[in-house]
Image 1 (cartoon, rainbow, N blue to C red):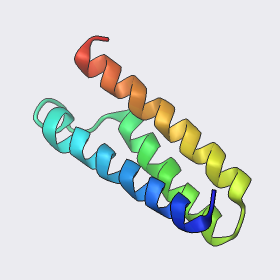
Image 2: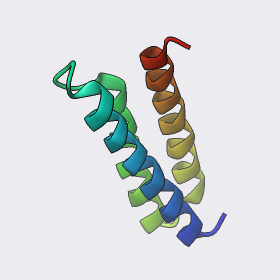
Image 3: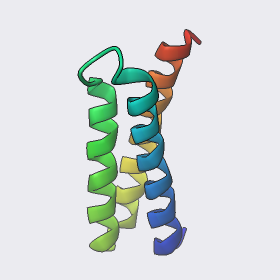
Image 4: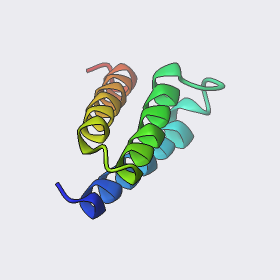
Length: 78
């Protein structure tokens, strides 16, 4: 995966985290710890991409996706 593709993926995931927070979590809670963690991991992924540590960036993205999926499942009951 190229750096540009990774930046695009991270930005898409950050938008998803924000959308979940605004539409679902914020009306009911002050914050959601797993969304906070996902956001932090995505920030770290960007730093890793900047430093050309692609394997670390991929790992951070995978972890963030798992957190996002867990939050979505807890919201939908799935």
